[in-house]
Image (cartoon, rainbow, N blue to C red; front, top):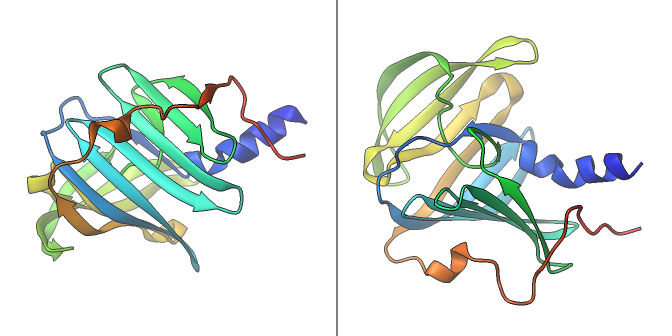
Length: 191
């Protein structure tokens, strides 16, 4: 039963399996992030600085923050409500909701150029191994920001995109564990 609860807690983090790229340009920005699954839209926030990323979202259980630290080869998952965090080793295959084209994507092809969220992007179609074979996903890559700012998987009725992108300084403290958080090996759950 404990294992089931832990799986339920980690569920939102497993919504999109991504791979961390080997090299990321030194982009620095923040943006609103919209994740859509069928008729449900979950708003969030993304911060990027020197290859580090912080993603925040809120749901009925409270706010969850995921901090990606390639320099430490770690991912921190923070639960604001319980002021706890878990530490996960950074592996090539990474759970999370970070927009990246998986390097193992098949049949990657450039299909056009489009303007998205005020940025010139290259639109790519790729094939990703899914539950029912290969699934098509589309990514809009903004070279200026060093990665995708939108993705869509129409077969799953799923999309993610960055809106209101603000280039400029992002505080280093956003990529650290806040004071007063306690490390746990399993998440604190409500009864």
